[in-house]
Length: 533
Picture 1 (cartoon, rainbow, N blue to C red):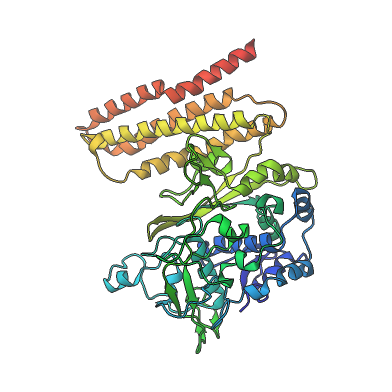
Picture 2 (picture 1 turned 180 degrees about the vertical axis):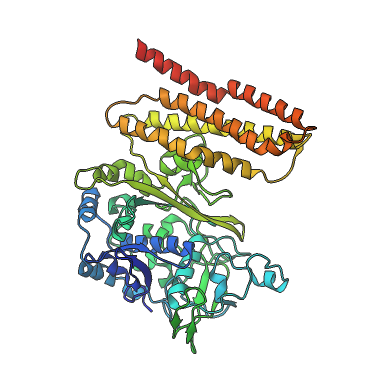
């Protein structure tokens, strides 16, 4: 199967029909493709990145004006097919020898593994031998079709967690967070969903003289990272290799008797893939690699390279919004290059009368504990465009709102524990459910307050006092409501009622004196006084 020429991508069209297509068919206009439809959410995220990487490699706009032209009028299927066809020889999936997509060129010997091991959450062989595969059982996936094999292989290579001695992590580290811009309308075409995340060539530093071997690492012998090998830095490869990083040495076994049903999608195939060969000490990506679709944490002292943000326990929410959409100076978080480019140019294009669409941010990734996948998280967030004149004030205000929320939550969590334990400071356990309930209770209010402020910034107005004041009141009210909820059971016990009432009294007093809340209230008062003058 060739991943450029053959129909293997599972999609859904605007009419609701589902089928598999070749990548160049995403440009069809009569019955347009609107989404990728996979059996697993991590496959869907990976295939979006596969197509973005393919377009970025073969069809990237020269500049923002060229991007605008292709946004307003997508290429025809014939045009896109001719652009992708140049790279088709590099995208064969199954070969006994020679270049094969995302597979080591020279790997002949190594450990033979079940195809299920390509799945990030699959238990390892030792876990299965020791009968410790309690929550995710081994042996459920024994054979997959070429389409699912390609999806699993690409998903593993771009998300690769630590996998034992010499089994390298992905170019972005293990379990990186990915953020993609998406049109708000569900009926938007897949082309527009992808094109929002494409960078102009001038922004990526793409040159025309670099060979395909420096873009696609599977076309050349792997840069081994054993004792005789070396690490791979950005200067050692073409800038486009960020989309095609290949840290794991893998070679799929070409099926000889391959008729059967795929254990993932259920489709019948004549090429059921059951095993692959793996070996350690593949490409070890080090140094200041920056993937355009991932937010990073910058070293404020500029002594260390940027670190990609990872999926984390509890998932994503508005507490991460500032760093994912702009930058969070307090933590050094910075939005991805694709998102930053939206604010620098794409956003204005999308507000033009003949475009005028809403945009949302789709963030997703694994929460990894070394080799163990704890959870897959994904979240959609609104994207607000703020005029460049008032953007610094807006970012500063959002930082203050989030700081106040963090402070209130910290106090709420402690006072709730004070109702449950005699010594709350030494209480052990996972209390993240208190955090999650608080964030969920305040999320809609957070966005509700900020949306009008963003609109006002485009009308040469920026009056933040009502927002600051309203947010302070929302936090105080929510904290007390949440406290009552979590301490209700203790309050019904007459012997513990005094402890509950004391903790609530302390919480209420603290909410009146927290510095971050006073900052919001003081800012509101100053702005109101200035308006009166």
